[in-house]
Image 1: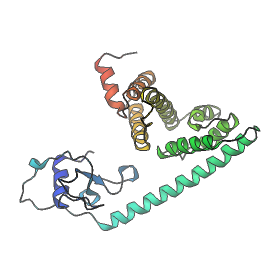
Image 2: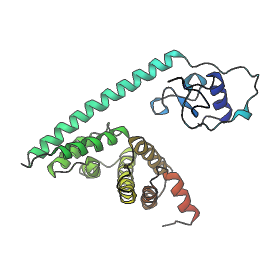
Image 3: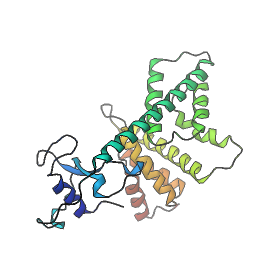
Image 4: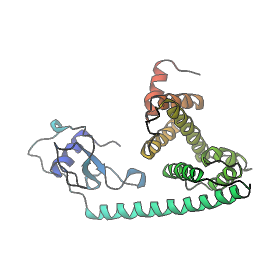
Length: 257
């Protein structure tokens, strides 16, 4: 559930329009309301889990009375719990990366071809983005890393679908969602790379995570695979992570298959 404008203003008023993380104040900086424990880690929209933070502020001052009682303050335990959850997630992610790196390098070295520093750099970059999307729980990542290394490739995401389809068991809904996310992210990144100028950066990790979340939502909403791919490519050409906007535009334009 989205944080309402009224609650946003109450949080900003409670925190004296100052970022709870760095202390910066409005109007020097723009402020937004942040979840102390991220929604992805189970955090909710209660005032005790919301703080003012440096970001674009959508406002909503007229939604609350100036003399209204402040909403409940965030509990300090929430900060500690959030830090512990993030640390645990980071440790798990690093351990998974180390495992994938070792099996990828082992498979590559078996081919007899040398691994360059550039190969290692791109493997590290692409794999960290993959893990940031929450795909680290998939056992097929190990097989995908082996397949990539055996073919002297650096993007193990390209091999996830092949690794999953190689198993005799039918794909679950979660498996199908994962493959949909992988395929859409690859199409989106490819279109982004084609659209960007030489001095412009590829999509940042935060953008990849956001886009992956939107693909998963589109999958759950029943969007047709080809329509998802077309919308992903359109978003990439626009250098945007907003898949939903492009799906809506295609639907409004009669983008039926």
